[in-house]
Length: 308
Image 1: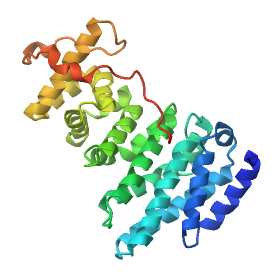
Image 2 (image 1 turned 90 degrees about the vertical axis):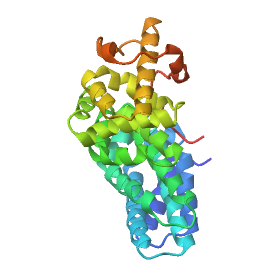
Image 3 (image 1 turned 45 degrees about the vertical axis):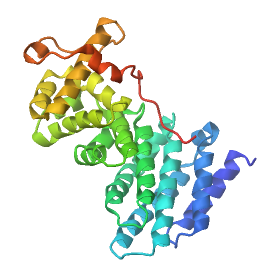
Image 4 (image 1 turned 45 degrees about the horizontal axis):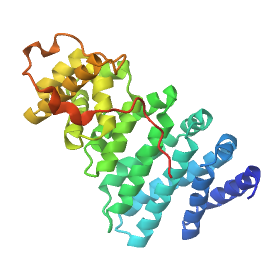
């Protein structure tokens, strides 16, 4: 196996040659090799800035070409290759961010977040022969954001600034279950007390909170959506009261089930630092605790996503 420094030089050269020219199938293999290299901790820790600079150039070119081709009814293979390359770029970025604060900050500083979000915003509307092509890229891009945010407050705040509320709303409501699930992972990772308070401020912000409840109803086994409610939303009585008024009947039932399950967990001493404020349920209809058993147990913290 070549030394990391030798591989690094190869990637710097190959990525630089990719940008500005016409993409080929060989370029896909180059990015796939980079994805594999970023799985190794030694390579991640020693990746040169120029590798990331050239990678963001490739992603930017892909973003521009995908949006341009979408207006021109391109040949299927032409769009397919670009979407495959985009998904692989996101996989490389995702792996580069795993447990590496230095790479997280470097990618943020080089503008990976706005470029990636431009791609993510364009993907759902693409008219392509096979709907699976853009969905794969969409999933990988969201996973990249999740790994970029884990353990890095600066990246969390930057992702929130660019995604809140519109992109979060769109992704949580996406028809692909994995896309919605990965979006809930990113939202959970970015949330804190200050951001929860922003959800109360106007109707569009409140809609994001209600969209999470809707996701809990659609995917009751999805831990991330449940954690958003129990570890963040239930700490704000103002938010819960606002949500309850705006929810449909079945979504209200879902919210009450989550509150009941959380109260049961607190009684057993299983959850610390996650309190349901007293007095909320005084005027709410009673609900059987057994109705909420589906949402337990919950994972204690977010886990970075990486390719097997």
